[in-house]
Length: 283
View 1 (cartoon, helix red, strand yellow):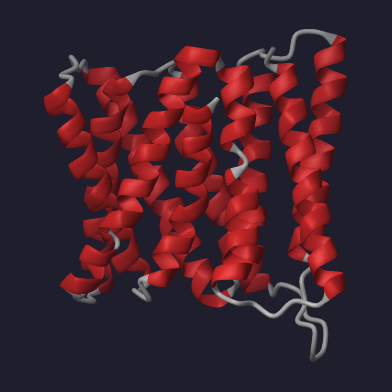
View 2: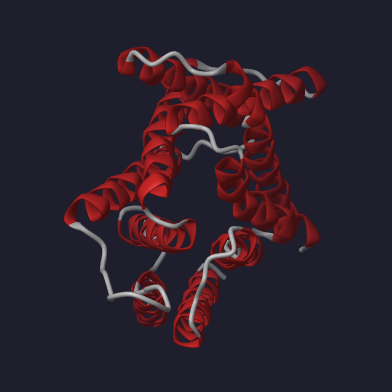
């Protein structure tokens, strides 16, 4: 359980670490993916794994999807507060991956699982809605614009694809990590070249720690799945949503009224209740 919580810490602090570097979205992506490649290469040297063409290619594609989703997430952080963007993106990603596993992979086979799963997803979406309805304690109330919603939705879709493509082909284990990180890094390089903006080396280097945080979380979840099972490790890892939401408010000193704090806490509680119920459907 402690190892599973390490994954929650890693994914929870990753967006906060990226924002603390004050780098641009492409610099954040390049540094994060470079850190992931270095970590994956070190892991491969320590524990070599055999590769076959199909799993390697699928894992590489999943890395490309991650890079697209993560770039859009970093773009969202430039326009929307982390405490608003993270619950929205992660909540929709969680909903998408759960529905895919239930409907396409047949993980929900009983009436009880369907009822529990639907209740869980309703709680997740309610948590996303409540947490996203944040306004400053002063000034007029403002919702998300259509452009902001589009970025959040596209990010969630790409990050959902990054997870479900490996599920669809039943590709698991440490052999996923190196080709996946290669797809992440090469995509990040391509995005930088396409934009025609030369990344600042110092900003890229600052984000190596962001990549390390993501990689440790990823590896910790693999280990926890083998030790205590997905049903127990999955809900614990999703505590990252609450860590990122509340942590960003505190670290970036976002001014929130008591009413908004209540919304954040209520939304986070609804999200976590939904995550726990999703875990129970996997039991």
